[in-house]
Length: 174
Image (cartoon, rainbow, N blue to C red; front, side, top):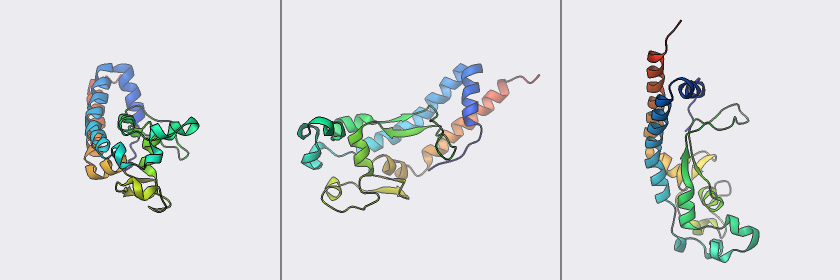
């Protein structure tokens, strides 16, 4: 799922500084490639009647209400980000991300990855865990990404390289 592209973040900074129109065009193009994956991921989020009733928003009080599940809120929380992330512990940054901003949606995404689909909670969640490895497995976003089969990743990389070529053609060397 991860691909290393050297200089991509510096390219995005240079585009914003010297050719803002090309920067906006590139960001819009990348967003258009990510939208179908996000829409597909939202389709994998189950309705409220398919979730264990003790986890729904209406049944929670106090501090647990933040982590409760509501299908509409979880679907609305799935989105994408085209700004680079902070550097992680290994020195890498994400150029684009697909993420879930809600606690309930994030719990639904990764519940049962390490322990397996056992106990009383995770088997009743439904949904198929898809992806590769324990850190790249989930029920909605990772499943949508796995079903995409790398088409979006290739398109995003192509958009970055195309904008780099356009930028290099417009730049004047002294």
